[in-house]
Length: 244
Image (cartoon, rainbow, N blue to C red; front, side, top):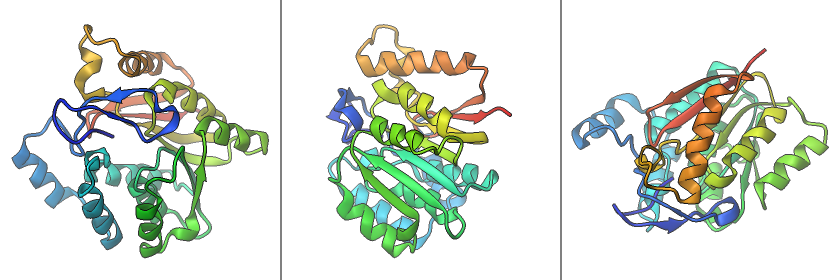
C-alpha cells in the first residue's frame, strides 16, 4: 500500500490506523518507468474484472495503495503453486488482492477478507461479482486480530492454505503469529510493504511503522518455523512457507 504523491503521507485505511505511511508505489519501485511499463505489458495476465478494478482504483486520491499488477499476479501464482483452496487476507482496500486470489481458487474455495472498514466495499463487491468470485470471498469487517482469533477459537487451526498480510504495520507480526496457527504445513504467508518505501534502510527514521517493519524483517530471517524469502517486488514482499 502507498500514498498518492512523493513525500506525502496518509492514514492507512486498515487495522488499527497506526500512523502514517510513506510513498510506496503501486509498481515495483526499483524499476525505471520504461521497464515498469514493459513489465506490465509482458508479464501480467489480468482478467477483465481485474483490469476494470485496477483502473477504477487508480482514479482514487489514494489509488497508489493498490498492489502492483505484477505482485497481484505473483500472489495468485504462489497460491496456485500449493493448490490453495482456503485463504485469508488482512487488508482489503478495493479488493484487488482478494480478487487475484479468489480467481485461482477451485470451486468451493474461500478467501476470508479482513478489513477494519467497509469504506471501499463499493469498489470491492461489484468487482468480485463481475469476476464471478463473489461466492468465494467472505468479507469480515472489524479488527483483524479478533477475526483471526475467532477462526482459531472455532477450531480452524491449520485449515487454511494461504495468507496475505497488507494492513497496519505495527500489527503485522501479530497477524503473522495468528496466521501460523491457521495455515497448514506447507502453506504460505506473504507480507507486503517490507521495504516500507525504503525507510527500513534509513536508521535515522524511527517512527512506529518503520521500526515495526524493520523488526519484523529481522525476526522472519531467524524464524525456524518457516522457509523464508524477501522478494524485491512492489514495496518488498516477504514470503514464508510453514515447514513440515
